[in-house]
Image: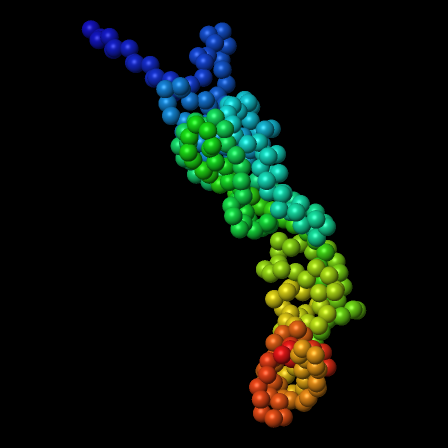
Length: 280
């Protein structure tokens, strides 16, 4: 006599916060890059991912079969974050010819309390381009702050070497020319126009094609240590000239110490032509 086996228990369906499926037709399983709306009794989880979905940093819309769940109310739009990132670029006026702003996906997950109103901001002293971040903080309903990473590229006109440039020389045309370059790739501040090269020399050799930066230049010295200089000494109601010897080096307009023929030490202002002006 055979025994009847007990019926196998049916496997429980995975938890879903969505509406129950219709009995008349099957419901396809859809995987979305953005999380579904959580139950009201649960805390808001995955706030960073929700913001990423709101900013378009999740999977492309074409790859999502179902629309993403609504994001947290009050979050700034992608357009607003771009406006905040573009503000310091626009402040530079004609120095920049164009720029490109790309918002990057947020890393990790975090729990964020519901927020009624947020504001976007740039951290104090943040670089205008390169790998940057724009902040989002809750100003009504909670107290949290998160940072949205971004990549900002900027282009502008700068001075570029056209031929090998030797150290100690003052670059000039046709050895250099102005052309559009990407500032984001430069480790320092580029020289923006040819007029910035006047009276300045290179601290090291520069190969052709390299962008000239301000850290590669120094002001040319008009007085060297030991130079015989002319002194122009002026005071209230008088002015005399004398000769002396420079005790320090100086560029145009910088202070320089001089010993006069009588052995007196004076401090004056260096001028072109080994001239030192002394005010008494």
